[in-house]
Amino acid sequence: MSYLLKRIGFYLLTVWAAVTINFFVPRMIPGDPVQALITKQRGQMTSEAVRSLYVLFGLDKDESLASQYFSYLGQLLRGDLGMSFTFFPSPVADVIGDGLPWTVGLVGITTVIGFFLGTAAGAVVGWRRGTWADSLIPVTTFVSSIPYFWLGLVAIALLTGPGSFFPASGAYEIGLVPNWDWQFIGSTVQHGLLPGFTILISSVSGWILSMRNMMVTVSSDDYVTVAHAKGLPERRVMLAYAARNALLPNVSGFALALGFIVGGTLLVEIVFSYPGLGLQLFQAVGAKDYPLLQGIFLIITLSVLLANLLADVAYLALDPRTRREG
Amino acid sequence: MRNNPKALTGLVALGVFVLFAVVGPWLAPFDPSTRSNDLLQPPSSAHWFGTTHLGQDIFSQVLVGTRSVIFVGAVAGVVATVLSVLVGVTAGYLSGSAGEGLSALSNVFLVIPALPLIVIITSSLPETSNLTIALVIGLTSWAWNARVLRAQTLSLRRRDYVEAARANGESTWRIILFEILPNLTAVIASGFVGTVLFAVISEITLAFIGVSDAGGWNWGTVLYWAQSQQALTQGAWWWFVPAGLAIALLGTALSLVNFGIDEYVNPRLRTRSSTRGVRMRVGFTPVLAKETS
Image (cartoon, rainbow over all chains, first blue to last red; front, top):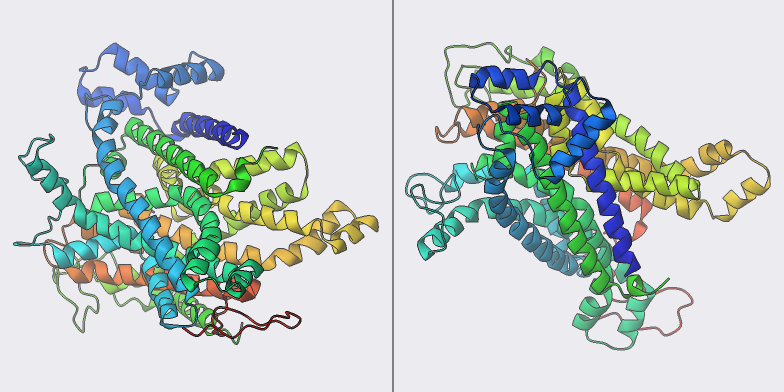
C-alpha cells in the first residue's frame, strides 16, 4: 500500500509542476493578448471574464508575484480555465469538455489495444528468435519511425474518397445528433475505424520491439533453463516463465511512454479532423488562443497521470515484490 | 561496429542525410519559395517531386529543409544529452535527499506529456526560430536519458574499482569523470541518438501544426502546406509522400545505429546465433538435448 501512496504523492508533485509551468509560460507572450481580444470582441466581454483572463496571464501588474500565483491557483480550483478566444464566448472548460470524450475514446481504446497486441506479438517474436520472426524487426523499425500523422495522410489518400466505406473526416455523420441510438453509434464506429487503425499500426510496432528485446534477455536466464529442464511444455515456459517476467518492464514502460504516445495520437485527430483535443490544440495554435492551449495542456497532463496511476495498479497486481511490506 | 551490418547501414544513411543538410541548399535546382506557372504538377524530369499549388518545386523544399531538420536534431540532442548526464550521473552518484530530488525532477519531466508542453512554450515565445525550437525541445526531453544514466551510475558506484579509487583518496570529480563516465559512453551515445530522433519528429510535428521557423523550410512545413491546401482531396500524393519517406528513412537510420549500440552493450540481443530453448554452458552439468519442435 505504501508503494501506491508514494506514487500518488509523486503524481500530486507532478500536477503542481505542470500548473506552475502553466503559470510562468504565458509571461513570455509579447504584448497584451487580453487587450487584443477585448479589441476584437468590441466590448462584448463581461468585466468578470476580462478579470479572469488577466489572472490567467499574470498581467495583473498591481499584485505581487506570490499573490498572482495564489489567485491563479484559486481560479484553477474553481474549474475556471478562462475564456476561449476561438470559441468565444464559451469558457475553455466547456470547449475541452466537448473534445475530451472523443479523445479518450479514440486514443484510450487504441493505445490499450495496441499495447496488448504489441506485447503479445513481441513475446512470440522474441521467443522464436533466429527464425522467420526476426524478419519482422526491420519492418517494425521502419513503421515505428514514421510519424503517426503522416501514416494518417497516406491512409486518407489510399482508402477514402467517393464511394469508400471509410469517411475521411469527422467523428460522425454530419446531421446526426449525438445520442445513444444505434444509428449514431454505428456512424461513430465507422468514423473511428481509420484513425484508430492508424494509431494502432504506429503504436504496436514500438511495443513489439521492446517486448521482443525483453523476451530475448529473459529467455537466456537460468530459471527459464530450469523450466526447460523440468520438461515443462514449451507454451508454459514461454507464457508463465519468460513472458510473465518480460512483461514487467513493458508495463512500467507503458506508463512512461504514455506522454509521448498521447502527443503523437493527438496529431492523428488533426489529420482526420476528429473533434477531440488534438484538433482543438491545432485550432488554438493557429488562432493564438492561449487560454485554450494552457487548458488543453493541463487536461492532457491530468489524463496521462491518471492513466499512469492505473498502470501502477496493474504493476502492483503483476509484481508481488511491490506488495511486500518494508 | 564494423562487423555489425545494422549499425553500418544506419551510419551510412545518416551520413547521406548530414551531407544533404550541408550541401542541400546549393544543390537545390530551384528556390523553394519561388512561385512558377507549373501549378500542382505531378513529378516530371523538371520537377522530380512535382510542384505545389503555387508552383514551388517540392524536391527543392525537401532538400533545403534537410538542413533545418538535422540542425534542430543535433542541437536539441546535444542540449538534452548534456543535461541528462549532469542530472542523471549526479543523481546516481549522490546519495540522500539531493539524489532523490534530482531523480524526482527527471520523473516529473518524464510523465508530463512532452509534445503539448513544447507546443505551449514555443507558441508563447516572442519569436520562433530553428534555434529556439531546438532549445525548447532539448530543455524538455532530457528526462528519459537522465533516468537511464542514474540507474547505470547507481550500479557502477558500488563496483570494486570505484570503491578502490575512493579508498585511494581520489576526489569525487575525478571518480565521476575518469572512473564512471567512460563506462557510461555507450548509454550516453544511445541516449543521444534516441533524443535526436525524438527532436526531429517533434520539430516536424510542430511545423505540421504551424509552429516553425518563420520563412524557413523543413519537412514539417512541406506537410503543413500539403495539409492546409487540401493536397489529399486533389490527389496530389507527391506533395506529402517524399517528406514523409524522408522522415521515416532518417528515423530508421537513427534506430539502426541505436540497435548497433544496444547489441554492443547487451550481447544477448545479437541475432546471429540462432539458439533457441536451452543454451549450453561450460560447467552446467545436466546436458539437455536441444528442443526439437
